[in-house]
Image (cartoon, rainbow, N blue to C red; front, side, top):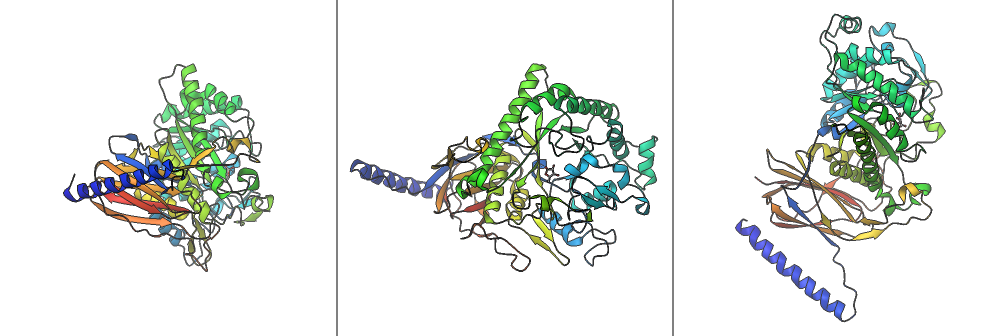
Length: 547
Ligand code: AHR
């Protein structure tokens, strides 16, 4: 330990023992101990939960509303480049550094014929898209998406239609993208100007096939068999693809978990991962409108991950398989305001305003919580996609002249910027608060005590940088977090910012784009014990150098 940090450590020790003895004296004379609202966590690089696969921090672009058209692609706009891509959106997504991007849906994919979206643009059909009742011109398709991925430096996660399309069409899509040359579908790609295969590695096998809303919905057994058949055919020519089967679309369908078990009983040996989806909201039905309950919803996500993992392991056991499936949480976000039938019906129009959720401060704090949960569960969840990226339930929103960063942009940007290397296994000791179960759906009522502070951390061995992500769920009071550094001890605080504010319902607009925005948080000196003062209602990131 360095001289300075040792001195600080001793000082800290003395002052905390004084607080303790004063506390016990007060207790002995009948006073309740006055809480300093302190939590502690030890940081030790030897305690590793996982090596982070950055695919955990992906996003999602669906042909829905204004996500593709006027979001990513707007030929004719002064903001578009020569290929029609919005330059401001390209810059914003580049700045985020999104690791993987799911495309083209979502519910859209279950009625999508990929061949409509490839080849000469003038010959592509305009079709009525039935998931969102919108006009689809197909001017943006697979090759435009893959070009855009290169531009924004992200990996594609493509989905194929297992709803209204045949297995043959799905397999042909993979052949079109990934087969080198000399076959019907690979030569079609080459005739479209793509001589080399795209080598797309990660694939979603349909979307939410358990949902009554899904085009071509199947029973679990039917879907499991169809998925198995497609996977077997794909593996004949592309054994290295990572195939993700559709798991339950949420936790409230009556088939939750049963669906996953039956699907996996049919196709476990042929797939690599299974999907999870969920959307959350501060609604009377889900939280009773209680923001303290709302900010604990990342723990519901955590439980869903455990439950689906348990089903995977159960089927693995049944089938005596050596393979352990990973999870793909490829749709998650807050979504509850722009959800009524009007917000979901495109009325046969092109690029209609759909699912245009406006995010406030409390949504951003919860999104921080979701990211903490995903990091904590990254030993099991390999892929994750914030749904979505632009205009539709999104951190980015465009108008004709610019792009706005909504509140949820900030925690997501921090995770992408600062979460690298190993996710650390943390034991946080601190106060909890009760959450009310009355009036809530059973789904959200099982945890009855919630920690005020939710903490996740990564340590990147090559450069020794540590990042700590802290959600303070206390709506009224500042809370302290003591970081006890076992190994290594930090030398410098490189970055310390927080997202907070007096009004949980504040949000950004094009006129007032910084209503909810990060501000610098005063950090303690780097050393063996560091106490951070976390504002009420806040999400904070600290980035430190240890070499
Ligand atoms: O992301 C919006 C929609 O939510 C997706 O299309 C669907 O998969 C989910 O129900």
